Length: 296
Ligand code: ATP
Ligand code: MN
Image 1 (cartoon, rainbow, N blue to C red):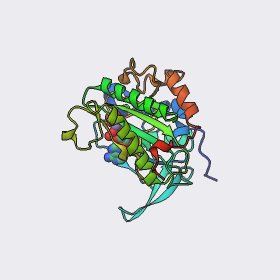
Image 2: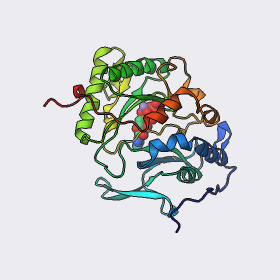
Image 3: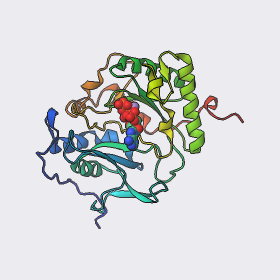
């Protein structure tokens, strides 16, 4: 049967540059995915995956892609999800193993964005995500807000992880038991955001319109909606610097430089405390605290 993955994924055009200004070829990228797969898989398994494809690498055209390519081999797992807005079903890739990550790498899927739900219970989200978006060039402000979010969740007894996004900001993630409906989950995320904003309204806002942010850090609870995605830990970004979304700890947050986490550097950084913490966190599940739930 063609249902088990091959031991080696064939790399076509291995010398093709995907992150040209960083000198990263398709061969490098596929090897990178192999190196991080044990750490990444616990966060992507069983989850419908959205891809950022860039067939000609960074600088060429790029697009979000939900539907798996029709020529995908049989051993790639997929899940069919109704997409009422598109008026048809979409078959998503589900990355169950290293070979699937590497096959996607060979397809120039530069970024991997799993859903905060798993295939066997698509209407029960299990990742609470706080997307922390600082104003241009103000990573320090994102750090300050992240520490506040961690503090609030810690007070509420919710276990968390934090990672750089590989872009401008940070993501705080809390793994949650699958017992809450999407609407309740979204409300909980909204309440959490409101608590943080109330503490430091001059520093942080949940105002979606850019003009109203006035240099403040933006928290967007709608990232917890059905159909939302979050870039996977260890996924690179389609940016020239080949930066990667990388787990860090609260202790090192004030001193890390997110630009230091790249496709080239990260394989040697997997024994740092951030990846260790996220490896454990991946198998934890906690309840939402009553302070974030609807009044009875
Ligand atoms: P940054 O730190 O630069 O904000 P980010 O990954 O948080 O990086 P955002 O634009 O804040 O980027 O988006 C948060 C998440 O929402 C992303 O990780 C991605 O999974 C999802 N997302 C953003 N834009 C889109 C889009 N156009 N289509 C689908 N998902 C998106
Ligand atoms: Mn963001």
